[in-house]
Length: 389
Image 1 (cartoon, rainbow, N blue to C red):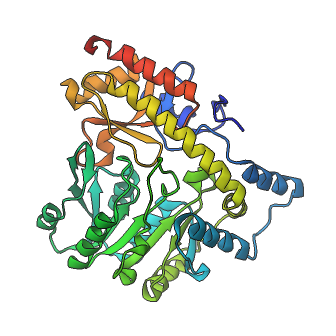
Image 2: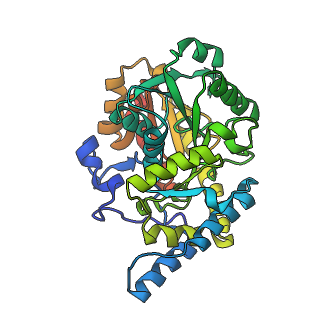
């Protein structure tokens, strides 16, 4: 396949394109959709073949015997991340937003505090608030234009009511790949405050050249307080399958999570099981390696173009396909720069404040699209902010 192929997703019940006018006032007929985090690429052929096999068989009944599915997950984690997973430790949830919500439900009570390092993926705060938990936003600092974790500052903001930390690793929207030292700092912070760590690692396969992701499970001394979350959906653009993995090594935590899963009657759908099994394979790995090269060049094109506009700064991308652009240097109000992006450039991008404290001067742009779309978006931005040139 070619990542340069333009695929018209309009009129297919695609939230990214079919909801952009409702939510952003940007028409899909002459605008560019760069908000929700899925890709404008087809999945690898092995995934398409798996779906076609389901269609050819033609009977969509209950799925049984998920041993191949679990084995595929274990193979992928060992092969790509050096992480040996016990298949008995894997739970399948309806995506990782659901996985996060399940962890909040299983491991905290109403009124308990749940910690986020912000700005961070907006759905975390949404489910925490909806569950009547106390959202504790700890705003990250910046060094050399990248986010850093200031644990001394974080310690000072804790109240003692907090029971859980949801970590985004790699980080969305800042694109950071946390170092081992930083992850060890997270572990010590969690132990000081007796927090369960829920590590959302959905972007762990989407790394820029030279970057290495360290799974949180490789940090010593936290196995009794760690919940790992991974998914194939972001990696292979199969988010519509709504399937994610919650992987829990600790027996006590695993029993608590299993009890809530059973109480809610949760089980995955066969579409997700078949597609993930197909994706976590040598063929899927080859496709991913090609994708990463393509995304790296998209990032270069986008960042060079955006950073050439006075007052705009795209945060250096170490992972993900989500560019986090700071408009503070323009001196404009949030309303003014947002208006220029949405109404002048006709680009739908995520609003920074939805990511929590520290996001006010930012917009998030999805660069997982054909190169021509990225080049068009950069040209639109240069025109919209042409008076700053």
